[in-house]
Length: 376
Image (cartoon, rainbow, N blue to C red):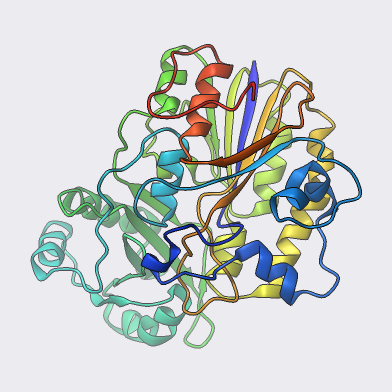
């Protein structure tokens, strides 16, 4: 048996009912990309059911089952979204800091033998322009955050080699657990002042999640192969194989390569939508990345059999027309291919319905507090 769970990172489809509580009322990642991009179309996704999800006119009935999902957990970050998709609904959100407490920072500095500069919220590219030259002069790593529950440490690869940066981040991860900080992220970069560039050496260190459907699958003997940053998001828990990627193109190539021999779950994240275009409020770039994915999709679907399961969804929104650079609290699209069915799945009340569906598909015990849509 084989299944693909494919996360289009940040590809939301309209504000959730509680979006106003997050300052996101009116956000709509896909809707606003359509509205701001003349002639924009995603014909393959629209044929599967995206047109129906977005209430757009379609030439024919959907070819796949389709619906929307709402997040039950508090938050709009990557870790919370992925954990809930895998069946772990968080009762308490991760902690978000504008500035990390001195006690936490000093504890990391003492153990790691470093002194940080920064410690404020910034865009990852802006902070390099602001503090990169000082980092080059002093050798002190740059500490910063965003509107998510993340502690990010940036360093030039010629000043702090990757193994040393990763060591610092692992130390930070241990200290961040008590503060419920979702992720520690290593952010290596290269270049000179005015022309700094982040590299593919990024590494995420997440909190260890509660038990998820990934653990249940792995315990049953099935393969759980993470593509992209999946293993990082779950701290390796329940992931039996991992293929890190640096782009959507690498992720799509890995899916095509790993699908034919698969016996189990292929769990993939395509990160460019969020990392390169959502956070940078780049509507044309986001639109083009969606077009590239849409053009690739038939290549993969040609190798999908009726008894396979394919789930395409997202983990949150990141409306590139929205104010600021943060994620947006949105519903996410849900497209499901299995058994030739093309049914309306409605609006699911939790992302964890994906975990319930995977549990049913692989013959595991029913997943608690969630409903499978496998045979809807």
